[in-house]
Image 1 (tube, rainbow, N blue to C red):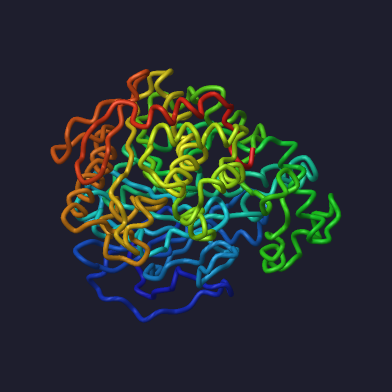
Image 2: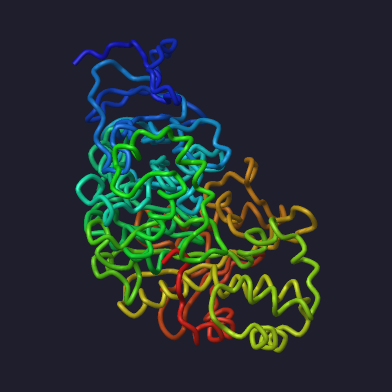
Length: 523
C-alpha cells in the first residue's frame, strides 16, 4: 500500500474540524494502525505521536459506550495533543471529541517487542488529561527501552453520571462511560502497539490518584480481563465504588440542577457541554459537605462488584501489582485550600480532625494517640499525619492486605523524599512521586527534592516501574531487595534519602484506624 503524504491534524479542537497541516519530513516516523496510517516526529531520540484518535466523537454517543472511529486512508499527522474532556479544570483545549492517545517509542516499527507502559492520569474522575508535560514519556521510553502511552477519556458527568436506573434503555452504561473509554483505548493498544515497537503481551498500567483508582476499578471489571499484564497505582485506590442507589440520587440531583426531567434523554443530549460543566458545582445529596461526586458505579454491567471489597478481585489475582503512597498525602490536598491548618493549636486540633478524617472515630482519641506516638510533633504535623493515615493511605492498606490474603504478587512503597519548595513545608505530598516515575523533575508540576538524593530516587523509582513492565517484578540492580507484601509483615519499600525496605511502617497508625470501617468517599 502506497501512503499518501497529505497530513491531517489529529489533535482536533472543540470544533471537531480536521485541519490540513504542513507536510512533515520524509524521515518522520509512520505507523499503520487498524484505523489508518499516522505520522509523528522524532524528539529527544524517540518517536513521538500525539493526538492519535482511538475513539469517535463522544458528542454523538453522550452517556453511552464509545465507538471506534471511522477509518482513514491518508496519513494522519499526529503531532498535536488532542482535546481534553470537558471539565472545570484549566485544561486549555476541551471538547466532547476527546478520545485521543499519545505514544513515545524508541522505534516505531514492528519487531521491537518492547514492554508497554500506559499511564492513566489523575484528577479524581473530574479533571486532567494525558497531555500534561509532567507526563511526557520521552525520557522514560528512552531510558527503559519501552513504549509509553498516555490517554484522554470522558470525565465527571460526561463519564460517570449514572442514568442506568432512570433511563435504562437509552443510557444503560452511563455510570461507567469513562471506564468504557479506557477499555476502548486498551483494546486499541492491544491491536496496534506492535506497529509502534511494543509487545501486546506485556502491557503495564500505571496511574496516580484518580488514575490509580481507575486502574483498581478495571481490575474488577470482567471486560478488562486480559488487556494488561501488570499494574502500579500511585496514591490511587478504589476499594468500593458508588452503589447504584447513591448513584441514582446523585443523578437526580444533577438533573434537577440542569432543569431536565428524569427520563427526558433527548433534552439531556441536546444541552450544550458548557451547561453540563456549570452544573458540576451541585451539592452532593449523599454528603452535603461536598460538591457532587461522579466516579465508577457498581452497575452490574461493567462493574458487577466493588473493586476491592469484600476481597481482592479473583480475576486479577495473578496480575503483579505495585501499590504506592506518599508520606504526607494531605499536606497539599488540605493545606493548599486551608493554609491555616499549618498554624493549628492543640485546642483546635480535635475539631480539625473531626472535619477531615472522613471516618467515624473519636477525634480526641486520635489526637491523644498521636501525641503519644510522636511527642515531638506539632499540632499541624499530627493533623496532616492523621488525615493522611485515615483517608489517603487507608485505602492502600485495605487493597494491599486484600491482595496479601489472596497471595497475589504485590509490592508496596512509600515515597518519603520531601519537596524542597517553600522551606519543605509540604513534606512528600500527594503527586510528589509523578515527576520521579517519569524522570521529569525539571518539568512544570514536578516536586523535586534535595539534589543530593533526587536523581538517585528518580532512577530507583522509574527503574522499578520499568522492571515491573518488563518482568512483572519491580526489583532491579539500583535498589535493595524489594520483598513482596505479606501479612503480618507488610513489607514496604521506602523511597527517601535512603532507599530501604521496612516491615509495617506506621503500624501504630494503621492499627488505630483499623478499628473503624473504611468507607470510601463516593460509595
